[in-house]
Amino acid sequence: MRFPTIWLSVPVLVILLLASGVSAINIGVSVGNGNTVANTNNAYDKDTTFVKQTIEANPQGASLSSSISGGGSLPGASLSIRDAKGNYAETYRSITGSPSTTWTYQMSTGTDGTGVKAEEWLTVKNAYSISAWGYASNAEGDQAKASVTNSHSSPIACLTNWYTKAHADISLVSAYQSADHAYAGASHGKPSGTVKFDTYATNKETDWAEAYTTVTAGYAQNYKASAQSGARYAQADIYNLQASTLSYADGGSIYNEMYARHIDNPSSPADTRDVSWVDLSIAGNYYWNKHLSTFPYNSISYPAHAYSSKYLDTTSASQSEFQPSSNGNAGVERAYAFNYGHGGRISTISGYKVGTSSWTGPTSPYSGVKATTLA
Image 1: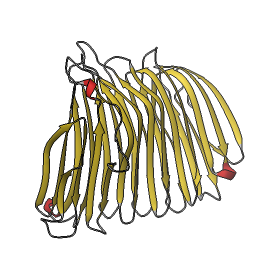
Image 2 (image 1 turned 30 degrees about the vertical axis):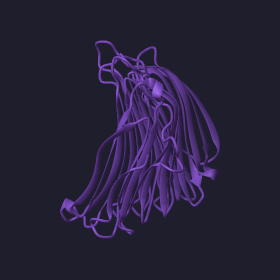
Image 3 (image 1 turned 180 degrees about the horizontal axis):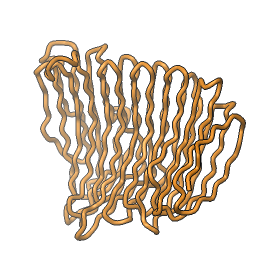
Image 4 (image 1 turned 180 degrees about the vertical axis):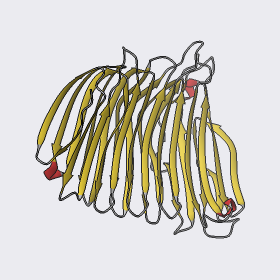
């Protein structure tokens, strides 16, 4: 059974109760003679055990929302909005589940100041894999994306109260994500699960900034990250992360990286790039649960931040971490900066409170490239 695309021109509330086997439903809202268009699509297959869906459309406010709860698998689907200025925002989710998998989510789009926005709220229990993201772009070429993936060999991957907001206007795009909890547990005799958060921004001037976090055989909680880009810069930030990798798991780890770059001439060799990055690595073992209680431990002095500006000819990256001494482990951090063939590096530092920073700038290659220890 297939539902056709439906275009709505008046406020309407549609409530659907769908059984397994329904293939798809697509709904669009057009506002102002097509100046703003919002679309939603949802697909279901034989592994979707049940669905309860509510769709609300308000053409006067250029808004469209879709709320769903159900079980089993949930094939990929999205909700998007575009306006006549070329601003675009979209959210997406996909779940591979079992009969024990349950999920709830809500997506919505609408106008946002002088631009558009797309938002998503998602909770999933006991899945094989979870994938979701928010994305924004504008006519100028700015882009930003916030995404999460969580996968496991058994149906035990969970994601609680994940949220994203993607915004686009003619001068700025941004993407934000947060999660109360993401569980990618350890397995005996099977590959452990991994949860990944990735948040980045880029622009046509070749600036790129990214915040990237993975936890294998453990969990992350209280995660918050954002990225934004405009005509002259791109930046990414992590505001908070608490994570643990379990001691009895093979390959358990916590990893984080802040990365920034720009390319002076895209047609020239790679040595015309400015690059700054810092990373953090914590490995599990058989004696201790390795965990971060707060990250970064001082967001004012040592933020987890990546920044690139080709206009200012500078990149920078910094981060910090705190681990209680009682957990018996120290993380390892590195920092690297590269500018026109000259580089600075901190190979490894460790401790319970550590921070690193890297920086490139427009001054001489030697004074304009730094990798430093913050704490």
